[in-house]
Length: 368
Image 1 (cartoon, rainbow, N blue to C red):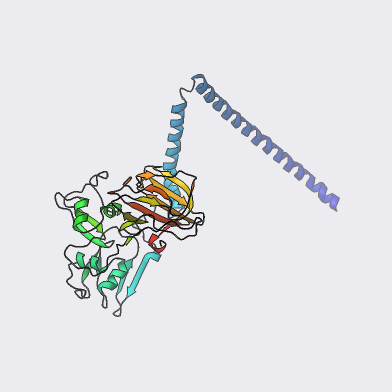
Image 2 (cartoon, rainbow, N blue to C red):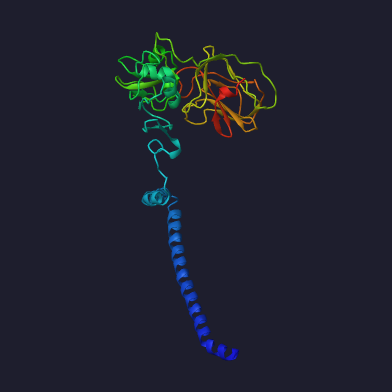
């Protein structure tokens, strides 16, 4: 029986083998011809470039790069549709997790976004709201709401009243003729560097920080003159202690003495310490220097980064002088540079950051 089946299937088996053999030779010959043609074209181009002693190499590279760019531009819409989320605008597309919805007793609801705000927003006062509650909700201080809305007292609000809320604590100032960031900062007892660092302040000239008459500018942590603040001042003065332990322990000493002119906020990932005497800057903890100098064209200017080999790094920016080199080790309290005003700076100060796992943290929670 098996012999009969095998005999019946023999012609079919031979036909399948023959069919496969023919396909193999067809594909092999076609592939071989295409490969040889590609090699001939490549050889021709290589010989041409070689005979001209590289004369056409640069145009060839430029044409190739142009082709790649054109291909990328052509495929960009297709990739954007295939992978949702690419190219989304983080300032206009608010993730669901950044929405806070509050429902009041009468059934109405208020939606407040906790995303980074780039402009003044309006808020409708709800029953039971107070100035301090609204201030906490938006991450600003009570004085900011008071000054922007000309409130006479903390009780000078009522339900359904519309309040203007600044993106950060401070003053919203309209520029008059002849004013500069320095005169505005002096008027509101603020730091001009904070005005420059605020990412949504625009300048007529980014090199000189010139202002246009009539434009509005945010003065972070500004205080209205001749008024008693409702919120306590956050600026403090500290002195740098003597050098401590040799090995890194995660306990950071103050890198410079002086006045804290700008604190840690979402757009300013460190603290600014100003001292008119331009003191030496000290290593906050022991470690190895991984960056020293103005290594790029960034706003940090001359800076030093120390890796403490325990998950922490510290950064010291705007220095006028640098006393260390990359690769050397320093002890906590060693002088590593001198305070200055290099980079995107409006005056002598030290910009100091602490990074844990590559992420900036509030230095005031770690300095001792």
